[in-house]
Every structure is written in structure tokens, then in C-alpha cells.
Image (cartoon, rainbow, N blue to C red; front, top):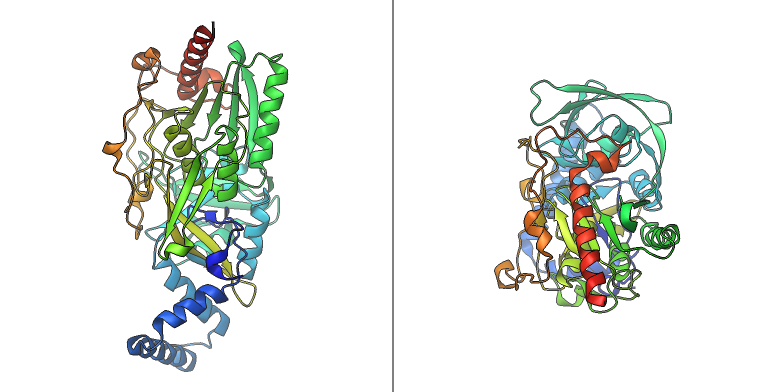
Length: 459
């Protein structure tokens, strides 16, 4: 199958080695086109000859005999990571680990990471994992593993060092915004079984669903959760809160499927590639699982990629009201292309656009109802969004935000919702989520108001 005809699966990644989709298209179509494009380009052949000369000099004169495979793999990875923050090379082991990860199970610490400025940045910990229980936070910078600096390591190498057999200990050195001294965080590795969906029925028959990642389990898990909530409410479910906070993304097809669980028809997302024939569009392909019941979506700076596709589609279709803080701003698509030797490359191949034509690349999605998690304005160490990363792709070709008509369907209660917690609000306790999660509390206020208005209009 030619690369430009692929329709299997694209990856929406944060540059991590933990989440990816797989486009199982042969690399020959794309590479052949690249070679054709460069045919007759004397400068390219001159540069390739220079590269070959460097390789031979290193093999001949380096202080100790280098490993040829490592030389080539490091060169490939350097070429790809030099393009943008999300393109990279995966050797055979990393590629196999990625394929296992998309099925929702892997060994390690349970932490989503990217690379920035030579260090490893935490995108978000995965719920109920060693990293989550140890208090690792989005935006934390990992500077050392077991006392050895991560500078000089590729992202894949750093991830590989964080993985290991269950019950094995590792110590992460963390630089956290607002904390002067580095934090030493000991962790015990586990086999991570990702429960991507959690749900519960809140007071007044308001359903709550937490979606932590867009693995292959996302859409079937969401459908099962909504069915369960209907049963628990005795068929009297009034509204739903979909929590996408700190969800770093995952598979594009799952983002489309989850959006289709609430949107019956119309565009979900489109992609625009360098070559027009590689661009694509995905439309809703399901039925509204809520049958029009009110929907509130929670987002924050850790909501990225596939999360932003879902949030953007629901926002543009006026199907949900978004509450929280601005999302991460990753509006690019990465395709994983298998290579000879059982490795693969993760290559940025397109930008994606919401149904209204918006590109959120570097900008993120702004919720209609802005509510902060805490009262404190905590500075970041090295930035905490796509726009803060090195070598990001530009935002271009999208509909200007100020040309989109403002929403006129927000309930009056929106003007009364506070933008931050009151003085003395308790610190978040995962054992008491409803009582200590201010954003969720305000989401419940909004959902109840929306449900009451819908009920009144139906009478």
C-alpha cells in the first residue's frame, strides 16, 4: 500500500515513548517519494557523502571501537529529533514496547514524558500507578535517574532506564516549580495495567467518567461506563461530566470514536499534510450515547493531542461546555512508520484542525468556563505547554479564533462560577475526589444547571 493511501491509524503523540498509534504502512512509498524529490539535487548527494565521511572517520579513529548499529541509530534519531519536539526514532525494542503500550499494558512507573532542553519533562502521571501515588506532577522535570543525569540521553534511552522488572527500585531526581531544592522520589516499578476509564454516579444523577488515555480501550470503555451509569441511576441519568484533565492523548481513531459517542453527524477532525493527497477528514460515525443529555468536559494544561481533538469537536459542535484551564496545544499528527530491521520512526506528517477549521497548535483550547485548580499562581520550570517546547511546528492555515461566533447558549450560572478556589480550600485527596476537587465541584454545578434548563424546556 502506498504511503499516501494509508487509512489504518495515525498517532497523536506528546513525544513520549509510552503512547503511540501505529500506521502500519510500508516506508517505501514515502521514502521513494523523498528520493524522487531529491533526484538531481547535487547538494543532497554532497551532504550524504559528508555524512559517510564522518561515519568512516568515527569508525576508524574514535578512542574505542564504536558499535555500528548505535552509530546509525543515533544519527537517525538526531535527524528526526532535530525536526520537531515529537518526531523520533524507535529501535526494535522501543517499537515493540510502543505496540504493547497501545493495548493498555506495559511495565514501568506509569508516567507520560517528553524531552525538552536536555531533560525529561513529565506530561502527566497515569492514574493509580507508582508515579501517581508518589505525587509526581505534570510539569515536573526529571533531571537524574538513580543519581545519574539524564542529559545526553535520548528520550527512548531515558524511558528504557525507567522501565524494569516489577518490584525493582529507582530514584528520580525532580525539579519542581516553586520548590527550590531538587526532590528525590523513590519508586518501585510495577506492571502497569492501565484502567483508562473510571466512572461513578454523583449526586442528583449526574454521571462522571474519567478518561485517562486514548488506548484501544477508550471507546468501548466509555460506552460501557455510560451504560452502567444509566443502570445505576435507574434510567434517570440527567447529565454527564467527561474528565479529560491530564489525558496526554493516544490513538486518533479512538479520538474520533469517542467524539462520535456524543456527536451523531458532521466533521470530527481534519488533517492537512505537506502533500494535499495525504490530507484527510474524519466524520462522526455513531449515535449520541447520551441522547442529547447535557455534557460538561473538564480540561487543563495536561490535556493534549487526542484529548484536544475530542474537546475541540465537542466545543465546535456546541455539544458540550468546556470547564477548566487552557489545554496543552499539540495540534500535530505523528505517523509511526515501520523500518527495515524491526525499528520504526515517528514522523510528524500533518497538522490537525477542529470542525470549525481551528488549528490549536501551540495555542491550545480555551474552555468557555475558566476555573483554576488552585489559588496559587505557580511558576513553571521550562514551560508547561507545547508553545514552550523547543522546535515546535508553526500554527498555520487555520481559521482565526476571532472569526468564530461566540457561544450564546451558556446557562446564566456560568457568570457566577468562581475562577479559583476560596481561601482554605482543602488540598486534593484522591480518596475524597468530589470534596477536594474544585474544578469537578464547579463542573457539577454547571451540569446540574444545564440539566435543570433542559428539563424545564422539555415541559
